[in-house]
Length: 334
Image (cartoon, rainbow, N blue to C red; front, side, top):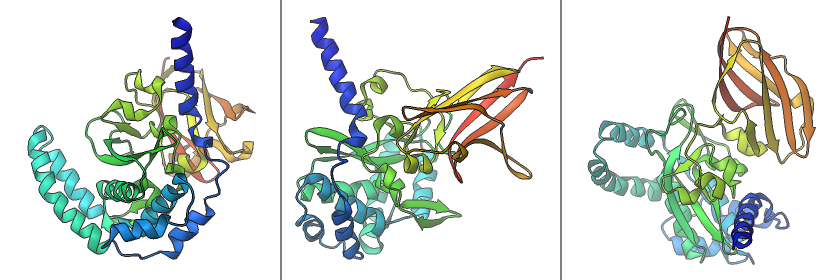
């Protein structure tokens, strides 16, 4: 009996961690091309759109890819709409029924704007992916939860503010986020900048900035069985590089002066030592910490740094020119 339980546990663990390589033999270029040549297709007839995007593709994962790429590259984020919902959510956050009633009314306006102007917020992206997947006979769910950013839920999970999708392929669930794949908002303007890293993302990486209301949608048995902890804050670029931070495990780290802190992360991509840095921001710009003992082994990059002075340090993991993760190091002692 114990062996059977152990075997089931091992299979589940292997399944969840294998997701990022499940479709390495699939060439998505055809699906991406179909999405591209149908740029600007109307949302007035979703069955026709789903048929047009998927009819010539042989596998469900390719059909999903065409749908996902089309949504990400044809729908723009609406920061004004997002701000309205966020303000209302904060205003009546202790009255969940009141917010749900308000949200039900506002959603009608939001979906009208999605259909007419192809602008929306996360719920609209997730809704459109689900509807097109359903029409293409792909099982798909909308997942609601906490999106972790520098501006929200960074320290603790305070307010549900995000939606994404889970899709079922070959009897296994996968995660994707069309909203954050599509681009980002800068100075209240949406910037189209497709990020492929959120498509069928590794559940462990995904959980660093997506935490579902229903824990089963973490998809990883270890994460499901653990209480939530504030892991290092990761940014969109972490998904581009497919980087999972390993050490420190927490965003906030307390150490004594002169302590050595071990940093490590896993990456699917090969990185040169010169590409990896630990930096801080100052009045004069970006300053690197003098890290040492850098090593790369079996896809894991590790290095050390000794904090010699008391204080609080915002330390950022930098790959090439991109900040991918942040830590807050508090150093105490005489």
